[in-house]
Image (tube, rainbow, N blue to C red; front, side, top):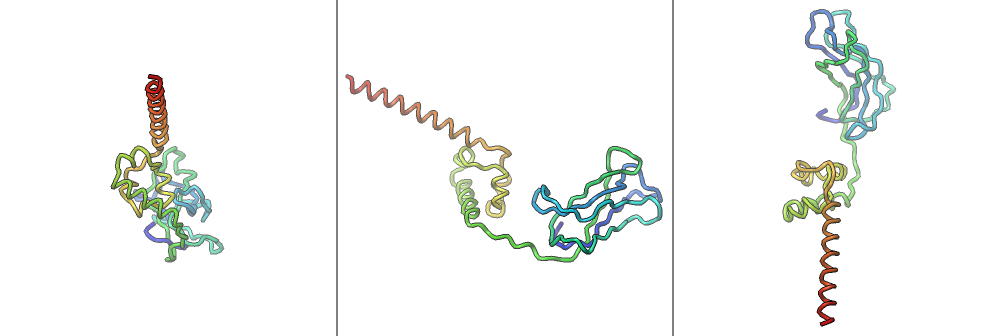
Amino acid sequence: MANYIKPTAVSYQHFKWNRTVPYGSPRLFDVFACLDFNCEKTEPLISNCEYKSSGQIQEQIYPIPLNSTTKSIGKVQFRFLKNHGNVKKTCVSLIRVYGQSADVPKIRENKGHRDTCANLRDTYHNSPFYYDKFEYTTCERLFSNGCCSVCPECCDECYITSNAAFYILGSLILGIGALFSCASLFVYWLER
């Protein structure tokens, strides 16, 4: 959603309407408030919303109960349970969420996150090889620390998994190998 709101209602509208609801359009659905960025933590807003095929109302509105404890939210998740015509694919046309404007929830800023992001941004711009090979720059780390506002270009090129451990291990093996080579040369030089 564009802004945080205190939700008051949701609606569904199907575009292809000839006084009968087409097969594949949602019939029964639930709506959840997302409590985190990826909607892994949710809270039910309204359950068992039925898009009725009778009547001539194209947009059907479902009020959210007044006793809902949901504060301001920025995302919702629709879970479609049944379709008209008992088909397996769901064809969704237009969903709306209505609500009252609310302030963005205050998030306490963590100075450690800010420093982490600033360091990553500096390394990204000043030492691209080091950033690419040795920094732990997974998308999860960048997004969870809020680094995308500090370094958007870092988030454009983030990795699902990091190769940093591979390069660090390789560097350690090469370093130890070089150390043994130097030690054996030193011993050889002393024995002469």
